[in-house]
Structures are given as C-alpha cells and as structure tokens.
Length: 248
Length: 344
Image (cartoon, rainbow over all chains, first blue to last red; front, side, top):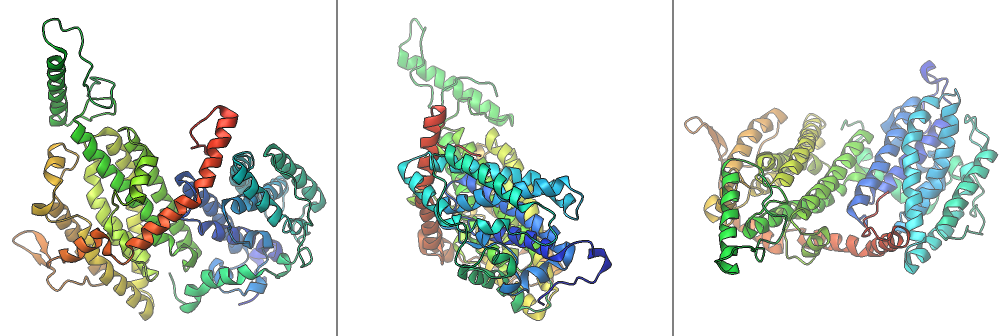
C-alpha cells in the first residue's frame, strides 16, 4: 500500500498528512531509541531510554490508528511515503548525539503538543495526554545536556560536536504542516529561546551553522529522507513483509 | 529479627566492659550469642535484615547468588533486544520493549539488594566483566528467529518463575522483597511468550514451523536452568539450611516439567523428548536424560554466544565510561558530589 484510506467517515475529520507527520516522527524516533537496548551507558538509562521509546511508540500507534491500520502503515509503506522529519531518523551515534537529538526534538514536540492540547482540533485529546510524557522526555534531555556539556572536557567536546552535527536538521521542524493549526513561526522562536537557554546553562555554544541541509527545508515531511533511513526501514519491515498476510 | 549490631563486617573487636575475661574471649562469646540469635531467627522463618548480624558465609553466599541473578537480568536483555528492531507488529514491539525494560529494572532492584550486603554495583559489574562472576548459561544460546522471543518468554521465564517464586520467602529480607516485584513482572513475561507462541502455532505453516523449531532449541537448555542434579550441586544443602533456597534443583525442575508439558499440548507444539510421558504412579511427568556435558561445556565458556554476550556487555560499559565520568564531574561541581549516579 502507498496511501492510507481517507474515505471513511470516521476518519474524515483527521487530516491524514498531519497525522502521519506526527505519527512517523514518534514511530521513527522510538525505533532509534529501541536500538539502545542493552548498550546504554548506565542501567538507569536502559530504563529511561526504553521508557521514552515506549511513550513515543504509544503515541505513534494512536495516531496511525486514526488514519488506517497501524501495522500496514508502519510496515508496508515505502520510504518515500514516510512523513517524519529527518532529525529523528539520524543514527544514534554516541550518547551525546542521542541526547542532542532528544533535546532538539522533545523541545519541539513539547511546544507543539502544548499548543495542540490547548486547541480543539482533531489532535487535542492525544496531545493533552502526550504533552505530559513529552515534558519528561524534554526534562531528561535537558538534564543530560547539562551533565554532558558541563561535565568533563571530553563530554563537553562530544556534546558540542553532537549539537553542531544535528543543527542542520532543526530548520525542518518548523515547516508548516497542512492540517496542523499551529503558528510555526512562533513555535520556532519559542524553540530557539528554549534550546539556547539549555545550551547556555550547559556551557555550550548555540551552533552557528545553517539549520537546513542540502535538501530544502521540509524534505522529510515531503518524503525525502537521508541514507540511513532506508536501512532502518529495511530492518524494521523485513520480517513483517516476509510473511504477507500473517498475524502475529 | 532485631538488630544486634549495626556493623556489616562481623563483630570482631567490639568487645568491651568485661572485667575478668580477655577481649578475645569476650568477642568469641559475643559471636556465639549472635550466631544463636541468627540461627533462631532463621529457624522461626523470620527475615534477616541488612543491619542484623549474619555469618560471613551467609553474606557471601547471598552476594554470590544475588549478583549472579542481577547479571543474568542484564545479560538476558541482549538475546531479546536482538529482536526489538525487527518485531513484526507494533503491538509485539511495545510488549518486547517493555519486557526488556523490566529486565533492566530487575537488574536495578537486585544490584540494590546486593548493596545492602555491603557490595557495590561497580564492584559486581567489574566481576561480571572480568569473568569472575557468572550469569545464567541460558543466555549463551542465540535468538535466531522471532519465535525465539516467544520461546524465551514461555520456557525461560517460566523456568525462572519456578525458581524465583520460592525466593519470595528467602530468609534475607531485601532479596525476598525484590523477588516479589520481580515475580509479578516475570509472570507477565511468561504469559506474553506463551501468547506469542500460540499466535505462531495457530498461524501460517511457516509460522508454526518457526515456533516448533524455537521450542526444539530452547527446551533442553531451559531444563538445565535449574542447575546440576542435586547430588552434584555444591551450594544447595547450605543454602537450604539457611532458607535462602527452599527447594532442590531436581524438585524445581520436575515442577517445571509438570507445568510445561500440558501447556505444550495446549499450544499445539511438541517437546523434543521421546521419553516425556505422564507417570500415574509418581503423579509426575517422566522425562529423558539431560545432556550435562553440554551444560558444563556452556558453563565453562564454550556456548554459542558466551564471548559475544560478554564482549557486548564490556563494550557498552567501556563506551559509557565517559558518560558516567561526566555525570560524576557535573554532580561534583553542582551538588558537592552525589557519586555520579545522577538520574533525571
């Protein structure tokens, strides 16, 4: 399958593109965090990273189910049909890269869900529940950013490199998404302020490079992804696709 | 049991105030008194608590057992984590991630229980990484297909529960209480494994074959999880006398076979033992001989995944060193030190 069913009256009120954008962000980041299982730097982080991954997977399942069958959408879409931002598909890298990705994404997701929760749109219910989970994700990322940025010279250097490396994927977060009734410009300025505040307290510089890559901003939302994403999907989808029509 | 002394390293050198006998004699008298109180508490099925006096051998035996258990939880994350990124449905993926997360949590409870005996997590991890302490040999077998996740839940967690439920009544309080929590979660793990296998067994021909293959590979190693036969088990007799352990290896193994055999029938799968049959007279299932050569071989380090599991664990620990150092340095700068175990 390539496009979800939009004909049913029960799903008519839900903007499909927006639902997929939110769902795919959560699904893909959850998958990446799941890759940490058994390799986290300390046992408490095994628990914390799995906890965040489970929250995100839960959000993805609710969102996908709003617009179709969750497994068909997760396992049978091709790469170009995924609507997640490129930030969340970036490989885990070292723990600093994972934390920088978490800081950038959870700050965005927290601001976005807080706005969606306060409205009366189709995602208000989900956002009201998810915003509490995401507040913890953001808090977790902030605390680790502070520890790594203001820890040892090595951790400072690693965190600094990670923040810079992922900076180019942050512009895309604020590309308007059809069906999401949010002021993206306001979202972006709130995000910049919040991230700059955390980085400052972590003794880290706000990266100065461009906030978009060689692809134009919004590429992930339009189905254009980076190389690592194809491999990630191949691994995620292969078993499901190897047994067409099977139940698990 | 009431606290006799607050020491954790025995009572030597605490004698004082005895006018006519020497300090050494007084210490001996005191030790004997402590021992009597300890023995009486164990006999009365009371719990021994961290601040209570306990024989050094009891302490050492508990540390050995709790550490091995904790190590098994964290090494045991690996074979299942192997399938998180390939789980065939989002529901199964969520269940598997939650299960692997629980195992990390069990590791935390158990390392904390060991800490109440005066042994730190770092010290125990160091012993695991250097091969001086063991984890359950079952995790040295590979997870080759998705059905292995189901088979581990049903058989490995099933065997673990059979072993662990009696530990909820273990004489050492912190271990017993940790086991109550662990067992509640293990029973969810066992059910999800059974249910995942049932879905495969009732699924397509290929899925059924996958389930049968996994059960064929995991059955005998699961029986070995109860440890060597009673007449070859070095720790059982003393552990039972101290009420750390409540049943012998062979008793628990039989209990597990009696539970698993009818469940296999319900699953529509066979167990790979031609000698397995109900014995009316004994009121138990008879089962075939276990290949103890394989057991000792895997224990010695020659299993299919011994090197892989330990290398991955060491690698994760080494890769994480700079993170732990950063957390410790940050805590030192900002709170005057809270030993680097800072947690958001």
